[in-house]
Image 1 (spheres, rainbow, N blue to C red):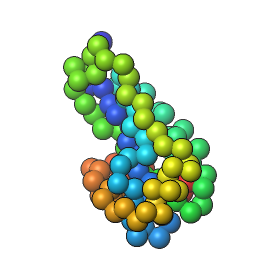
Image 2: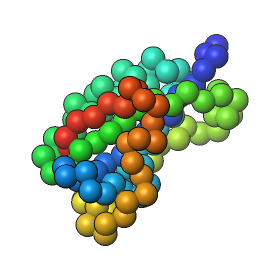
Image 3: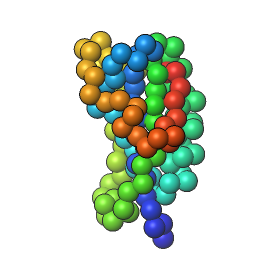
Image 4: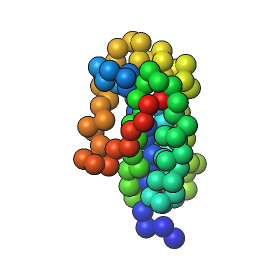
Amino acid sequence: MSTLAALMILIACPADGSACVQEPVSVISYGDTGSCRTALSGALARAKRSDVHMYGDCIPVDPALLAGKPGVSRSMTPDEITAALSTGRQDARPSAFAPGAVANTKW
C-alpha cells in the first residue's frame, strides 16, 4: 500500500508572465508520487500552444484524504484556458510551488 499519494497541479500563464489563471487548469490525483511525476512529464510534453506557459508539480498528500473517494480529475480545455487568461486573472503564480520543484513548458 502506498504511504504517500500525490496531486498533479498544472497552472497556465501567458508567455509574457503578466498573469496566470486564478484556478489550476488541471488537478488530478495519483496513488503515489512516482506515477504522478511520470504523468506530469507527459502532460507538459503535450502542452504545445506557443502563447501560454504551463507550470506543474506533483504535490504529496496523505493517502487517507483520497481513500474511498473517486479520483480527483479536473482539467480545462485549451479554449477555457484562453478565455480565463483573457480575463486578466492574476491570483495563481508558479512561485506557489516549492522552489526547484516546478516544471515549465510552453503550451
